Image (spheres, rainbow, N blue to C red):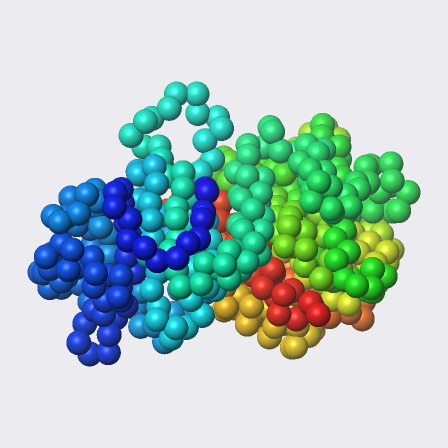
Length: 497
Ligand code: BES
Ligand code: MN
Ligand code: ZN
């Protein structure tokens, strides 16, 4: 999408989208440019708004085709809602709505008047970001093009009060959009294309953005004693990988980094504890956590974030095979703790156990956040509306929840404690990899916590939010990219100086 910012000046042709705010009590309020258009069309705008009962309510639209008095093909009015509550997330969502109304046009002009009541430049930048986010499509495997279904929008001119400032702000917004797109690409790719080694290959493209990328294979992980991660991958023909990405953007390059860890099960059949066939294809996105980590690294690098962050992904394929691990196997993790693997489908926690330990040993991070499509139980609890957060630290947890609120990627905190931890005691090893039939998301988090030393840690169970068939406010359908904007905001608000 080609986005440009310019001063407000009503175009003479094509499609123009005009933001209309909701006045207090008396319905829609036209800005100066909108009022001028109304005059030019001899009052068509105000008559149409009245006839359609359009009050400028946020995200409502009203399209006027070939309005008289102009050579425009369409004027689309879009409700901004009240200017007081118009913030960056609201602007993003309005941008997404605008995208849907003009996606079949090759180009459009958007006029955003907010009369100085709010930070117009910031809103313009985020409105543009929303247009970008909603435009994402994954069409590379279509060999026949459905011309009618295909979006055509290539460029959008955003007119606003301070285009120079909006353009500046957009640099960081666009970096995040790029990151979200990368995450969506990785998550959407089929599992015969994205497997541990090919995932690493994709991640290596980040070196162009200035990220240091390295990967450990089975030999290196064996040396480190990562028996938990390696056990999961041992039934696969694809070699397991541990991906390490570093963005050292802080002034002090040696300052302790923040560590972000992702579950990267590139396909989860369940292993010998095989999943039922219906919907098993879903498990191509069991690498969603890892996908977020890579997209986040791109966003941080492209906006040159002044912070040190290390991103780590445990990449494995969980397959049943003559060499696969069996229910009942006991494995030894890098931490030295032993695990009785009672269900080979509870594999994500086994992978994370070793990656979390490695992250702490090698990087001594100030805090660790992991993201994982860890449990079906989190979907039962929260559906697609929130991801679950589990943490050993109230402050870290509050900061993540606040960042999620600010970008509308919401988190809901679950309790943890010894009463849950008891459920993963094993008679023959230090722990087992499944709890009882209840509180499955919490016992999974308790398992992870056994691999956390004395460091603030939060685990985000994103199983319900990585993929959304129907689409969301900012995604057309399929992979959402949930988590990139959240963590970007969390880092920007709390770790950058
Ligand atoms: N990847 C799944 C969790 C999952 C399920 C993600 C559905 C997205 C949609 C995970 O590896 C898994 O299989 N978890 C099991 C754990 C159980 C065996 C203790 C589950 O949730 O059923
Ligand atoms: Mn599983
Ligand atoms: Zn899984």
